[in-house]
Length: 399
Image 1: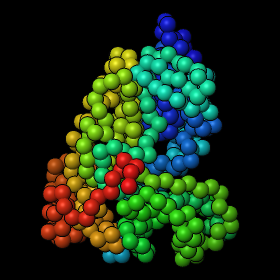
Image 2: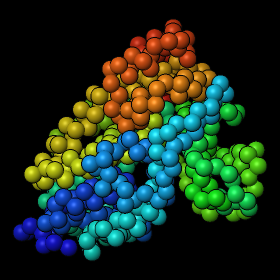
Image 3: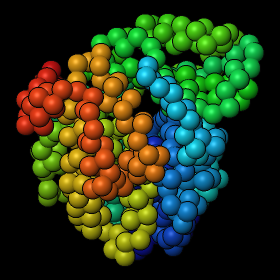
């Protein structure tokens, strides 16, 4: 590890070894090798128990050096299935899992950078205290530990259970199924997501755009098994399982979520609301933010905190249109009919779909998304936009 600046234990301390924190550490190692970096993670490996997938178009060619080493598998395109239509799209699709993520970071980060098995008790802009009392003085601190509650925010939840399955026979898929909504909706927008990793290993995730974050694991496991059997797939072994509930932001007050000032450290990832408001998709923003940090001349705690606040507030302003779509999804559509919004979306031109997921939609894209017969009633849509309609869930962790 490079020598630290005088009087400090470390130049940059990154809290949380998930996607956002790991990408920042990689970007700093490549672009600022003179700095010492600590990536502090409470678990014994990086990446948690997660699969992150993304479109090749999400990351520009000049920035793919940051993501390409992390990729476990990629495919030449993907499928979507809805009751009214099926579509094959040609945008290459890539997948990162926690194993490929952990291995790539351990290979590329300098020795001593990764600090696994360490829980952060308190953090400020230039200091971290770990459980057990150890204190680390840093030039700057970035908090990328994610959140389970978002004060001041309202919307719903994208909750899921995913299983990596080994089948008794080949599944026959050559590309992923991004959404299969030809299934019972169970009171919300429900779809199954399928990644064929090898001819017999397949990842199946049962996903719900729901009003609450609770997950009935036994029920959803049964639904995954039922889906596999409906496709003629015989499960030999469940290799691994993951679950989670991601906030879908439809409305809120950014200054309540993130009061400006004080001595709190910079934020990154979900902790900074750097997610797509409708999809909860975070990789494109995590890449952009990591590159922004690595390009800063002043990496002091104060400069990082101010930059991250302003960067995230600008992201919040740019997300107004997508928050409106989230309000329509949760506030205007009947739960069992929510899939119709995505069903219609997937009839639009492929470049528009690419820009939407990458968080680069244009005003013309916005107009095109809203043009034509709406998938919900005009009255319900207008009511939700004006703050009425079905009530939105609070995302602050309180009832």
